[in-house]
Image (cartoon, rainbow, N blue to C red; front, side, top):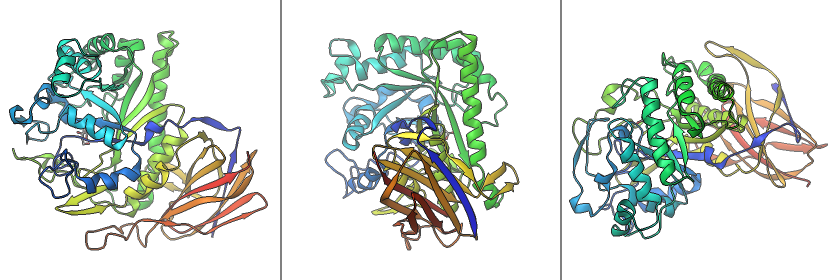
Length: 499
Ligand code: AHR
């Protein structure tokens, strides 16, 4: 049996974990909004039209920053269409997913939803077909006190107090040729700087996310980011990055090693941020906003994002299995290991569309990827520690060497949270956790997600194949913990520690 040692020293600190790395993403695409969170005609709807049963299952995931309304959708969206009396909102053609958008859910509904759920609203403005002025007006609508044109409109629509939206994304994937209004980096940079300036002039307390490279494989990777950051200078609080991964080649060992490449993408994006800061001799460093990430490959084709001119079609409804859950946990480990640079991350998405929750009529399915997010999200407070890992591993086909165990750790108040993934398809692993400057007193809580094969998944007929279970295979002796991990498993273990 494989033996791995993980050394966790109190002084090997990466930085505080920003709770916003446990963010989500709600886009007007397919059945994410309509027939997802919002379905007034459902028997499960509350007085506002939200699906209580769906919200009840989203609640335990403890999402923080919730990005809205897109995604590609944002680049053709005019926010004024989505406010005011519902009966007078226009039905429009939606070109990002070739669908129909009835505008029955807009800014006010989104803000209400974030308040019910305790989410932090994060809005993406339209820098594709929209103007800097339209973006600035949206900030005024959301954040200005009553007394001006757009804040008065908000009041007319029923909200006297400003919404206080602090996080604003300046467009979406503007480097992608598929994006409505896509332009070269220098033109985007001018547009975004103009919008950002007006938006910050309207509310200086907001934070701005500029579009960075949406794929590490895109030809303009890094160069786009350099041009944008050099142009916008200190306006940039964050630059965005996106990543979707998959097992298209049917090579599980390689797929599970993709974390190396996620680490690399983060480090490369951080490098360009530091380069731009150094070139500008600025005191301000832009941080990373990983505002779309997930597994997505089975439904990543043009037909899957084509609504054929209809409303709320079944678009990109990916079905997830156990190996996907391990990869989702790997993303989270990577974000925690880079807590000093990744400040926001948004699981794309939350319901139906590449999501942990799938709805069929009245039925709700919690997919495999629901569970790693659940067991990590509940253990997120504290300082990320830099783990030292010794143990076996393998050379993957595309991503180099990886240890058999992937890990991250958070030192909280009186508690040490450790996260372990066993990548092996056949072998159990013994993992020894060796603390330094930390005294493990007892096991506070421990959960495991695993299954009988990499392809095992939850279905509406068998919904509990993959889920979290209490985890008992941990021995605490002489201040060390020994954990016995089954193959293809994810463990989240919290130890009570001496102060
Ligand atoms: O999340 C689905 C789509 O993926 C988003 O609309 C877009 O930003 C990305 O390409």
